[in-house]
Image (cartoon, rainbow, N blue to C red; front, side):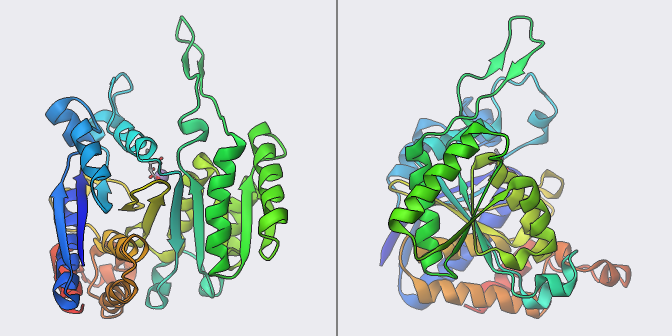
Length: 360
Ligand code: IPM
Ligand code: MN
């Protein structure tokens, strides 16, 4: 089958890791007789440098005309350390999410058995962990208006805003997902303090009782959830939450697997879905050929499974990644400290990518 993929490498290590995902997709195309057509677009700091807009119209058009979007990373230190910068690379990502209608962000956390030793958590805590964070992606504090400063600039404000419609559509994604899993949704909020959280609770409960009574639903305050994620992560199946809480909890949950360089994500909603690693642009590693390409390669697997329905092809990518990890063909982030002390350095980004391609 022929599929058009918009490729947005972005900033930092983005181009290096997406290049490996493209190589793996080409191996899949060859083995399973598909045709993937990649068209590159600019987003983030590189787009600001080129045309002053971190998500230019031509990139939006490219995404809209594609069957799916594969994205690398966004961000550059030259903007991080400049609070007065008028345009920031991150605005490109937010604009892209909003204009593509990507209201649901799925972040699966599934530790690899062979990497137990790389996790900072004790082995018995990781046992049986398999969870997905469903993060609302186009509302809340990230987008609420008004936002800004008062006249003299000494007071700043952001608005956390949610409507019932926004809550229902993402809650549906979580409940439907739970039906194919352990049928357990935990909704995470701060309903003891925030009015928006109380609306979330009330709306999710009503939707659950009328349409998803077959799913076990519980509620947890976000501070407690942050603690449970590292003390009893196996408790969770589907964790549903709003935008900012989901941002924070997904970084926290990523450490369970041993490296944030392993975790893929999908953002869905309207017509075209976007797939990206959950990590950032890792500018310190840019151009060094050391970044872990597996999160992006696994994002490509999610893309061909969820957007194109290629389940066996996705399984082939996942098992090739697993083999690379089991055989120790991994980048330096996955070499445990003890091994590093013995002088083991790990493999380069391209070597890991090539190994995975060879095993498709
Ligand atoms: C993420 C990132 C983004 C977010 C940043 C880069 C704007 O941290 O995708 O989790 O906060 O959503
Ligand atoms: Mn984040």
